View (cartoon, rainbow, N blue to C red):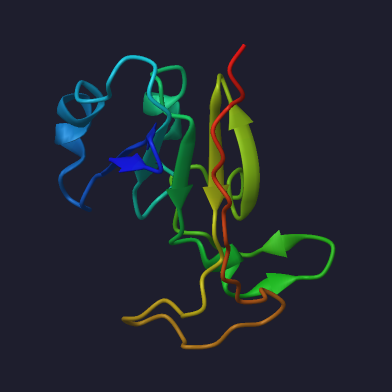
Length: 130
């Protein structure tokens, strides 16, 4: 993708298609800024250090139900509270886990407590030429 002359690689993985991650990573043009979208933060250990500059995830809802000074009670991430929400830096990859505006479905109670909903806006700017 080219935006005002700047190249940006934008890719994603569908839930249930995680086995395709290596194929997706192989499509990143050398030196291009790269953004990966995936519902869960659970791929961070597989993508860090592989040319992904920004990895955007959600799913945890910031815990959806949280306790002051502790945070999420449950995140439904394989990492537990480690990436419950916010900004993280892992070996050259920035991970942002958005709390979202909705709630988990299914048998989980449809409630949010002390886990403010959020919409995040990123301004992506090219690195200055050196």
